[in-house]
Image 1 (cartoon, rainbow, N blue to C red):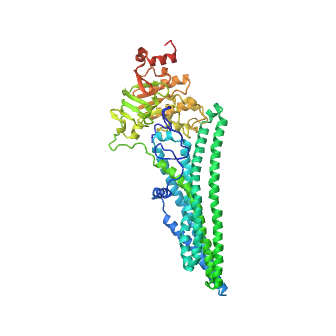
Image 2 (cartoon, rainbow, N blue to C red):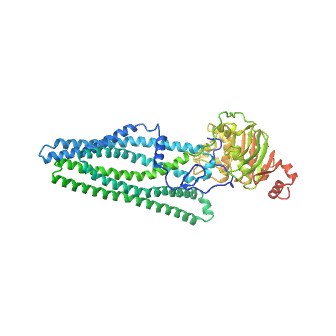
Image 3 (tube, rainbow, N blue to C red):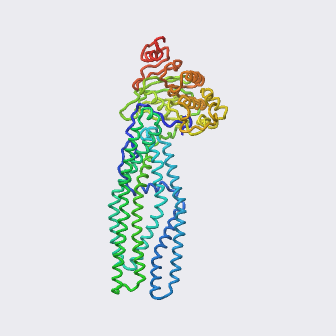
Length: 613
C-alpha cells in the first residue's frame, strides 16, 4: 500500500471509461453483465475452498444436525407406541416420558446448533470480507476506472450479507433436513413399502413444482441484485455530486433517475417475491393432499385387516407429515440460495480480477534515490488502439525541476500515472537512476514519490493525522513545521481544536484551497526524494499561490520535482519545461529558450500574461 500518496485514484481526465456496469456480474476484464448466476455447484465449491481453515467446529455442527434429526425420526415412532399402548389398555407412561425427553433433547440440540452456527458463520464471513477487501487493495487503477464506487460497495456489503444470511440461517437447516429425510424414509420403508410408494408420489409433485418455480426465480433474483447495484451506484453519485447537481438545478432529473432505478428494483423484487411466494402455499396444498391420501389409504387397509397395528398407522401418518415438510423447507432454502449464489459470483468476479503486476523475483531495492528520470520512446493507451502518449522521450536530470504543460487531455497526468507505476507503459521504458521502473520493488518505488494531486484526498481523522498520513511517526513539531511551509498553519490554528480538529466527509467543512494546502503539507512532511505536483495550486487564490510557490522552491531544492501546471507564470523558473499536445512532445527547454523559439509555448504564455511579457 502506498502510504506516501494518500489518494484514491489518479487518471487522465480524457481517457476512455467504458459504460458503467451497475451491479451486474462482471466477467474478468472488460466483460458485460451476466443475466443469471453461474453453475451453483461450482460456486458453492469455490465458497467451500475459500473458507478452508475457517470452519472450526463444523464437525460438531454435523453431529448436532444428526442428533436433531434423530429426535425428529424417533418421536413419531414413540408416539405410535404410546397410542398402541393406550389402545391396548397398557401403561403408556413410559412412552410419554420418552417422548417428553426426546422433545427436550430436540430443543437443547437446536440451541447448540444455533450457538455453533453463529460462531462458524461469522468467522467465515469475516474471512470472505477480509479476502475481498485485501483483493481490492491490490487491484490496478484500471479496474476502478471500469466500475462505479457504489456498485463496488454493493458487492462488499449487500452481496456478502446475502452469503452471511444463507450460511447462518440456512446451512444448519439444510443439514438437519437432509439427515431427517434419509432417516424418515428408512423408517417408512420398514413400516410399509406400499404406503411409502404413495408418499413418494407427493414428493415427486413437489420436485416438479420446485423446478418450475425456481427456474423463474433464479433469473429474477439475479436481476434483483443487478438493479440493487445500479441503485446503489446512482445514490453514491448523487450524494457525492450533490453540490454540482444543485448548481446546475438538476435535482428533478436526479430524483427522476433515482425513481426509475428504484421502481425497476421494486418491480423485479415484487416479481421475485411473488414467484417465490407461489412455492410454499402450493407445496402445502400438495403436502396436505398427500397426507389425506395416506390417511384414507391406511384407514382402508386397517379396516380390511391388511394392517392390524393402529400404532403403526399413527406413526406413519406422523412420518408422512415430517417427510414432506423438509422438502418444502429445502425448496424455500433453495430460493434463498439463488440470492446468495448471485452475490457469491459477484464477489468471485472481483477475486478473479488480475492484480497489479507483482515484483520481479530479481527486483532491485530502492534505498538511495538520486532522482534521474528518463522516458525512452514511451507509448501508452488506456485502451488498446487508443494511444494517449506517442513516442515520448524525456531526460530529467537528478535534482532539477521539470514542468509539464499542455491543453486538457494532452497526456500530462498520464505521464505521472506511468512514472508512479499506476499503469505500465505499452511500449518503450521509463528509467529511474538508470534502471527500468519495473526492475524495482513496487512499494519502495512509490515511497520515492511525494505526490500532491489536483483532487484532494482527506480522511475522517484529525488534521494532524491527515498531514502525517505518509509519515505516521512524525512528531507534532514536524507536523507544524510542514504546515507552516505549505502555508496551512494559520488557518489550522483558527479551527475549533486546531491540529486535533476532526475532519468529516473528506474535509468538506474546509474550502477547496484549504484542503489543497493540507495535502501539500502532507507531501512536505513525507520528504520524498522525488516530488510530483499535479495542478497543486489550481484551487488556491493568487496570494496563497505565491506563498506555496516560494515554499515549493525551498522544498524542491536538491531533489527532483515534476510539476503539472496550467498557470505558466508559476513554472517559469523550472529547469526544464515540456509541452505536450495530443500525446506528443512538441517542445522542450527552459522558459527563455521556449520564448525565444516563439512557438506554441510562447503563444500560450503571452495569452495568459498579456502582451507586456
